Amino acid sequence: MERIRAARSGDAEAILDIYAPFCLPDAIASFELAAPSCDEMRNRITSILAKYPWIVYEVDDRVVGYASASQYSVRAAYDWSVSVSIYLHENARGLGVGRKLYTQLFQILRKQNYYNAYAGITMPNPASLGLHRSMGFVKVGLTPKVGYKAGQWLDVALLWLELQPHVLNPLVPVGFSALSGDVFNSR
Image (tube, rainbow, N blue to C red; front, side, top):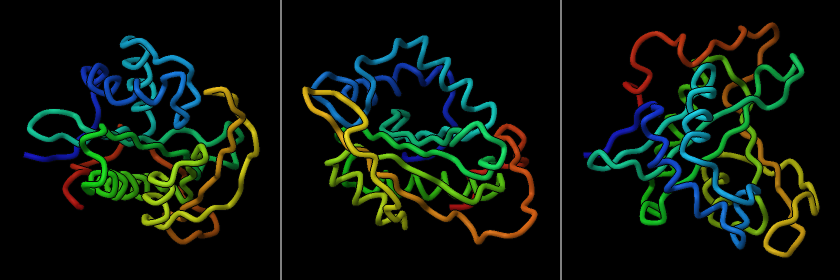
């Protein structure tokens, strides 16, 4: 059985199993130089869920991917924008899991009154770039040689997705925990 649900602190180990390979010294997708501890991952999940969605994709009660949103920037005028990220277990790639996760994440973000989603992708990463473009993201910038990992200076592409049409005097975003009803009903 497959389903998407909100992450829980108890998912930290499964999420870390997915994320840790991206932190290896020769992996460039994440700029972390070492995987966080299980306690640190648990803390990340808990702190993000206070305001933003962190969702997981399960197959037969096993987490095979996750997507999350987080604060784009600390200045108040950025409050309607989020950074998003997605990570999939190697056996879940190319099966539509990323599209399903992002579709659900973006629906939730719209319900929260967010207007912009931004993703930073270390280059080269054709698979991630392809997923983001297929979801409607457009490349709006490139930060050249911003990180050093795997013995090289790496560029990061900035991609943007308009979550909903922009309006004057937008409603203030609401926290993920404040959403009423089952946000996973509509897919």
